[in-house]
Image (cartoon, rainbow, N blue to C red; front, side, top):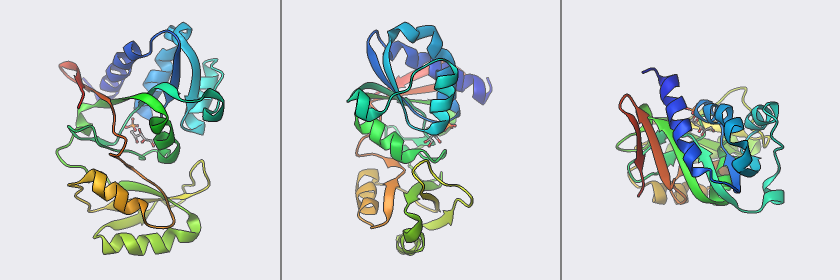
Length: 219
Ligand code: 5RP
């Protein structure tokens, strides 16, 4: 089975968590795009939709969904999103698509966070995937120097501006043995808007698609 087929499988498996009356948060990325393709089939179960990026909003609107803001919806029932890496404790690295800030807000505002991945994303320790960090443009060099002190190698995602008007540093060379502690530590650096470690608020349910089907993990 190819990677795209696995993404479709994981996305299909997430549909069962969207029950009638769901206030739904939608993430960003190629796996979530498979979810968005499937959503029209269960339109009647969705009370309202909030999106984590302009890209996902555009795809949802193409399918006839009226996307509202988190300010309008209040807290959400279910948030479905992908990840760049996931551990068995359901800690994640996210932000490969650069939407990490709004993704983190929606995950925090949701009762249940369902993460959909193919089996290539499951890792023993987070950090092989370069850690995305959203930074204020004026603080980019300062933040880079702080990350070097923590033995990371920050690389500016050149030419990329987030939906919030900020820059992304992709930090290579990290072995994140304690994701909660490291997320807290990075959050204390002024100029960092959002760290792509999702450990303080991990996923609640991880759906992993592989050749043998979809496995569900919970902590
Ligand atoms: C976007 C994200 C995505 O969830 C992550 O990059 C995974 O994307 P894909 O499903 O395309 O592999 O965090 O900011």
